[in-house]
Amino acid sequence: MKKYTKYLATIFLPITAIVLIALQIKPLGFILLLIGSLLLLICSKKFRKDIVLIYISLAILGITPINTGIQPFHMLLMGLLLSAAIAIPYVISRFITKEYHVKFPFRFHRKWTRLEVVYILLAILLPYFVFPYALRETGSYLNWTVTPGILNLTILFIGTNMLGIWDELFFVNTVLGILRNHFSFPIANTIQAILFTSFLYDLGFRGWFFIIIFCFALLQGYMYKKTDSLFYIIIIHLSADLILYFALIQLHHPDWLAIFIT
Image (cartoon, rainbow, N blue to C red; front, side, top):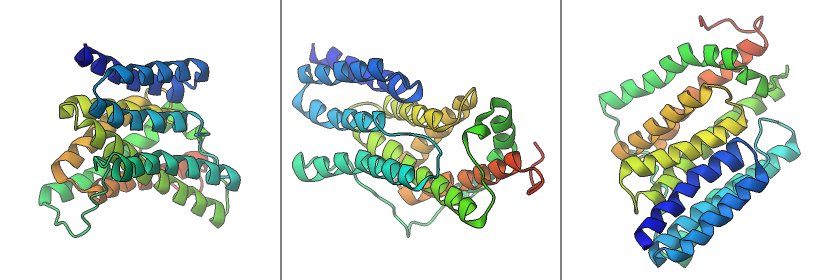
């Protein structure tokens, strides 16, 4: 019985993320979150105390105003809540349950292989051709505001990169780190990729752009498994975000920048 309940409680994670975060259907989303959380009561103690950490973070994301606004109060509030979504699982895992499932192995001094260097270059090259087209065709670029002025452009750059770092710290490191202790890597990685995609869909990547995000999230999880280096996958993400940043500028202000061919 506990085995089947374990899978049922886990299925509610991606369903809740899609409804509560991606689609922003709050009442139904929180009902699903509550049902999934209650199912954990029937599961084993070890499974329950681990997976409930993800449910807590999903609840926090459910009340977070997720958008690309750069107003100071909004950025502060969103930043505090997103930080809590990472900090709470870390503190509980390390100091209360003492499972140590949430770790941050940056491995700054780890040497990269030639293949890993090539992958970084691909993380720049592929978005260069794909992002401008996908942002324009889905209308996703309209979810960002690119206001003239060095200060505004700097805030946009910092905000884009900070969110990219948070994505890896939460979805690939925290969520995947917890799930890998209870499921095979393909299952754990697929679940984190759905949560990853749900968040970025709500953030502004609409239409069929979610397919690109989902594939990217799967690859990030796989590269994390191969390298065990948060620093490396963050560099990958920031490389893609750099292209995103310039693509947004060109799409909003074509006369400012003309570096893309798609």
